[in-house]
Image (cartoon, rainbow, N blue to C red; front, side, top):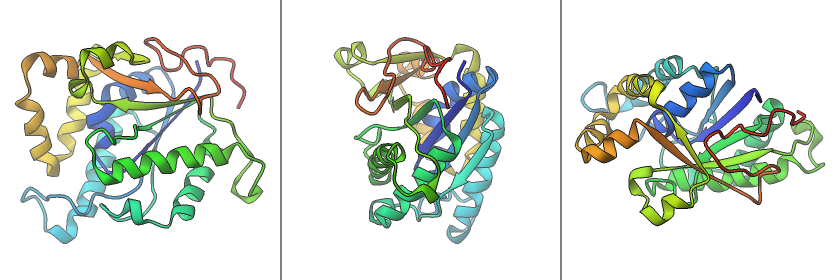
Length: 243
């Protein structure tokens, strides 16, 4: 089993809502999970829990508690402001991501797809920044950013309840998270300032809600993955990939 998973997302809570079960599953299997978060979510809603100017600090603390629940080893904050990721200095953010990729040398990177899952502009921006960083990371340039590294597999997390039956048939990876559903729920609850999002999930159709806590969906980028794949294990066939 390969031993490094790198998650690249925009806000605290993205990890828990989008793929909390998958994170907990692979962490339980002994993988090292590192989470990169572009912002601290300081432009969101405080849900009456704190003052607006305190929201970034509160969401950071929520994320650290959720990370412990899921088994995330390390959190890296890139330091950009919520809702301003698309206008962040492009080369700067890509450089930071290249350095992280070259340092960790993960077997799998997971981020949002081009639609950003919910359509959030920060989500869509981090998708494109991640792709650019993966492309640059393997090139023999900027040695001070670390030794070049070719990523074995890049996956985009997909929102199952938003996908049509036809699209679901084309999904590359469906990860069963039955055994880790409670950890996912606990991690989501740690994001107390995101009560509105939690309530939205609770009002979902029962069939969709059950699936949300049973399976998580991922599309593999065949062009940016040295070893693209399909199945139920996003780390399958990567056991012998050299770092």
